[in-house]
Each structure stands twice: as C-alpha cells, then as structure tokens.
Length: 234
Image 1: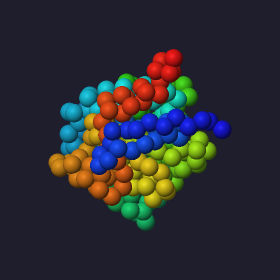
Image 2 (image 1 turned 180 degrees about the vertical axis):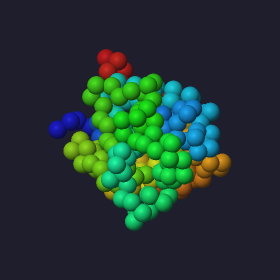
Image 3 (image 1 turned 90 degrees about the vertical axis):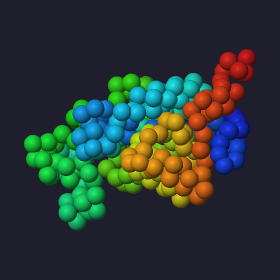
C-alpha cells in the first residue's frame, strides 16, 4: 500500500489537508474548441482572448503534479461523426449543445466542431498529454457522465481531485459537483479555469466554496506540492 503523504493546501474557505498519494489532477476540456481562435467557442461568440494564461497555468500545474507522482487525467469533450453518442432529438444535449446547434444552423460546418478526429476536438498543443497521463473521452458536460472516470479514480484510491480547465461554469462545475456527490474532495484551481459568459467565474467560485468543494490558485498549490517533491525530502 502506498504510504500517506499529507500536505496542507491553502484553500478557501478553509485549508484542506490532503494525501498527495491519494490525489489526482483533472484537466477539463483544454481543447482547440474552447481555447483557440477559430474553435467552437470563438465561432459561436464566446471570448477566448484570455486562454493563454489559463493554458500556461494549467501546464505549470500539470508539470508540478507529475513531479510528485500525482496522476494527470485529461477530459476530452466530443462526439463521433455520426452523432451516435449525441442521442438525437430525444436527448437534451442535442437541443442544448451550442456546437451541435451551430452545425445544424450552418451545414457547411457539419462535422467540424467538437467532432472526434478534428482539430477542434484536439487538446491544445501546449498541453499535449505526457506519457503516463490518462485521457477520458466524454460526450456530456460532467466528466463522470457515461465515462470510466470514477473507475479510473477509485482504482488508484484517489480521494482528492484537483480540477482545472474550461468552461468553469459548465464542464468544470458539472465535474466538481459530481465529484462531490461521489465522495471525492474537489479543489478547483481558480486561475487555471475560464468561464463562458460574464460573471460566471465568480458565480461558480461562490458555488464551489459554499456548497461543493474548495478553491486554490496554481501557485499556492504548487508551493504546497513542493513540500512533497523528491528534492524537498533529500
């Protein structure tokens, strides 16, 4: 059994003591669709101009997690070209996914947005998964909906999930809520997340700090994790 490695994270609304050996990082949907000019979000009118610092903070955090043995798990949102995992008009996703609605309204873009195998679907180059990282595909907002994420975490005896990515108020918050409901301790990294729509970052931070989990920053998290780095124990 892996020995415990306890560290106190400077989280809000109160500090949280976590076992580094029972912690994983979940990187939510850091794809061209949501982060890049010409991607799905940009095409339908969401502002992606602030993506660069979110990508950089996520990269620094992922590197710090790998350095102390915290597994890095990527969630990747998308649909197959035939739309079999959408479910058709009988599915709420068919009606509420802005990407699917845009492609129906603009048939010339059919099969281009959030479609598996396309540039739009790909994780941004700066965050390409490293050897040993795990990629969990999904076709709904929550990383737990219709995926093996819970199995991936439980097989590794994970108790705490650090969560970053996009969009804060959609897939990130949905994943945090479901983690909470499954008895994981969720910690959202505020400066490694980006919301869709005005005021939504603050709203999700309020929801998580008040009801579903804890908040921290990338720098605070990395400083705490360094206490558990191999160099710090020499």
